[in-house]
Image 1: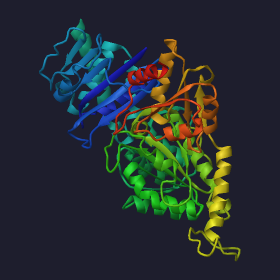
Image 2 (image 1 turned 135 degrees about the horizontal axis):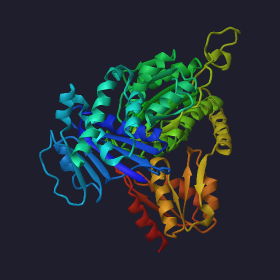
Image 3 (image 1 turned 135 degrees about the vertical axis):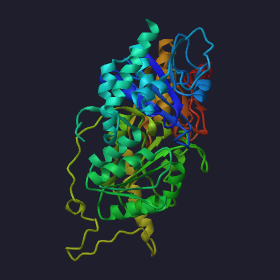
Image 4 (image 1 turned 90 degrees about the vertical axis):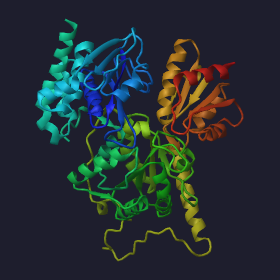
Length: 182
Length: 355
């Protein structure tokens, strides 16, 4: 297994944390991982993405241009990455902020109202975790437990009060996917 | 940190900071610049926790001068920056070298010249390996290529700096600095106050014999004598502290030569090429000064062709050519201005070289 994933959105949506949580969970499941952030000079409001590679064997450079799977949280990122995702890949789309349809037959598209769902849970900032939970549900790349356990390692101490709502959001995202596919 | 022996997922920038603290470094001064800010940020939180001093200086020059001061009193001291900031620090680095003071300087290099951009680059090779500032001097240059090596070589950098009493440079790039990988954090050494082990350090004169740290040597022949002593030191380092890694050099038609992040891309290319039956090997210098001339020279005698891959317009290739001494073909593939070499392009170049 050698999986390249991009999490994309705008600065402030927790795009870095999303990728790092996925990488950390995979690492705890004894996988090789690399996490790579990408953002411009502006941190909040600008486009941002993080890249994650998860592999059974040693990762050479960890650098790539085309992801296998993509989690897309806003429209500018959708326009940037919609055509880059590899054939046969999975695309999670935050339908709360992206109305566009992905006009490709060769990828699996999952539309999740991540921002709305997060709002219903009581904190729209956990939209990233709803989307990541959905990706977990559809890919099974790491277990939901590993993601939940990794939160305390990835979030800084002063954010540990938010672990519960992040766990709820991850679980809700996974549930939404199961509802979509059943 | 409680997770002493477990692996952590940590960026290159952060792991250098953690490794420095564990190596007994208790003084850090820096000035913000992308792509090395995570190092300064990590230090701002963790250095005070370790009982050390963290200073966000008013400029790069101030930061290196503060490091100079800390080195004078024998403390293990660190500063870090990225390309334009490292240029500003050169005056201080030259003074450290002249005064025989140990210190560690980190350069997470980016695109240049001038302000360039904030993307990864390897265009500071000349500056790093030829002293960098004014005068007849060298700095040891360590070029790690992964998180674990950042940890291990940071410890080594402090040890070498103390052993030889000279500045040591760790040369990374924007990708290696910002990328997070699993790293095993090894236990730290016990911090010892400098006056217990560095007899030259200016920690108060208890013997009556003056201790002088200076780089100004006036008078006929005095500076030359100092320069020749430095030369003797550099010769010894060239004999004893060359580090490199080689793959399949004895069974190759083309040998890639690359350091840092480029070497990781090249390693992948090498593996893929060998699967296709193309005999590709690799030499990765880990110390850029002293340079592994001998390893390359030995490979040159075996009729291989060299392909040097760098993220600049061709800098390390000059050292490869020096080592080869005209005995083998030396080719070059590079991307510059913050761009990364792609695997397929390197592969394409290998095929051209073989023809």
